[in-house]
Image (cartoon, rainbow, N blue to C red; front, side, top):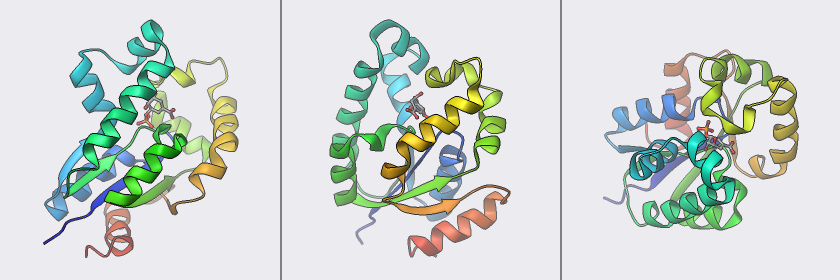
Amino acid sequence: MLKKNIILTGFMGTGKSTLGRLLAEQLDYDFIDTDNLIEARIGQSIAELFKEQGEAAFRKLEENLVQELALQQGLVISTGGGLVLNPKNVDVFKQSGQIICLTATPVEILERVSAQQHTRPLLQEKDPLSKIKELLAQRSPVYSQFQQLSTSGKAPQELITRLRELTCES
Ligand code: S3P
């Protein structure tokens, strides 16, 4: 049976990796976190890559990975928060499965990322909450094209049930 990919996107700290891993487990799909896979392959953290080669080098690796993953089936893929800003990535992923965008309030995003804020090069700011709001405003036209699921104040299992309904994989 064809198992279309399920792609979870959305801003940093919206729960993509946590929920993606759980969803994959429950559906018996393979789980891919694009950031983790890129880091494993280059043997370097994304923060280091940004510092040494710049954001454009990272975005190119993301684009190559999207092409590769879209050829596979039965994957739950959690994307880095900026991956869908490249319309090519969106087109390719749309053909391989269903894209769902997770959302959360800026305050909740900050709470979730603050423990590992250093791993997010785009949030290395004196006032990360303002930066989060600014990036969310910039990106909202892109994120809003996808089906949305708010993760603020909700328990993981409740969200997994909702994701299974949205993807008709209940
Ligand atoms: C980014 C989000 C990060 C990571 C990189 C850039 C972004 O992933 O890909 O730091 O542009 O929003 P997470 O959304 O998994 O934190």
